[in-house]
Image 1 (cartoon, rainbow, N blue to C red):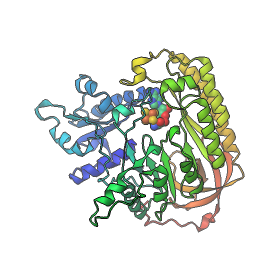
Image 2 (cartoon, helix red, strand yellow):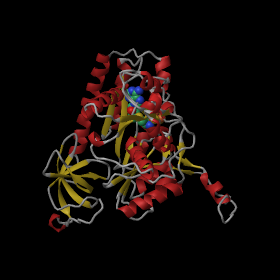
Image 3 (tube, helix red, strand yellow):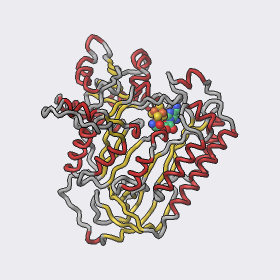
Length: 457
Ligand code: SAH
Ligand code: SF4
């Protein structure tokens, strides 16, 4: 989401004639677009502020803190004498960035705007998308779920969605620019809802009366609309919440060939008491039933998840429930985090962070080990199979390899060849690790793949 926001920021500032440099050492203004989701995110940012000043070696530079940390840690950022920053802007204030930059330093002030909006979606800004195969498209902002551990509802405000037409228009432009894949983004992307249709018709210049059947359009409708755009081959989305998975949505994922067969289903905990404390609104059994239904309707689905270990009061037996769900569901991959208390959240006010660092560490290590084995076993099952791979780019680390992704989302490494980013090719998988698959191109014939030097990708 922050990458998508940075693309919006670039578009906003370019309109005001600011110019971007590639190395921060050459910049008069440096902005850090920050995350506040876990403690280590903010430590990293504090370290970066010192680094930037150090690299500039005394030459003046204006430093701005943007994003969730700006909202969450406003007071500390403005008053902490050890933090040498010049202005701050929250996620809904990016249209004011030019003013904040110009005001910073005047009269020794640190201007800030961390106002959260119930309406701002930046739907009138066409982001400066980073070149590549994939483009991020933020379809909604904010979150109303208030999971007790999570800072997002406080840093990004209430949930609001862009209209289907507005999103389709952006994706059309992306297709013309040569992007092959879009990833639709929202903090809770599948609770997307567009109520605008009836009003839009009522206020259109043609003065049509609203159709009686005009209904709000949900996330499944949005996926269908985006999939009709020529040139876009793959559609991904993140991050959904298990509570918003009606059969209609699972059916679109299962049946629409452009919608990738990947669902990220954040579990957080496998224990019903802990889930209730987290305010996740589902029980262990309901989560298991949903995973079973998803697999039944879409057998080749790639299922991933997020898990938090060491939530306040989580016992060993309750942690074992999470292990049980991980083993039962057999996720293809999992992002596992140690609970990190965040300022302002309900958990920080109601539940003391009483699980020791050692206990958290021991639980995360055990769970990661279990998941690694599952991922390895699942990845190994692809050896000998032919999968469709969307080519992304060459790798820096492994100079001889080219990188692509399967429809599900597996990273696939290919031997060097005359490939073109953005092409979808058939690959025979020859080996697997817990992190990636390796394969050989079988179609089209690698020697017939010509590099298109005019490609915008
Ligand atoms: N909207 C998504 C989550 C986005 S945050 C959802 O509902 O699942 C990404 C992940 O960070 C979360 O799924 C959660 O696993 C983790 N996370 C969020 N707050 C956290 C906290 N306070 N401590 C540890 N992990 C946290
Ligand atoms: Fe945070 Fe996700 Fe819960 Fe929203 S749904 S409060 S973003 S964890």
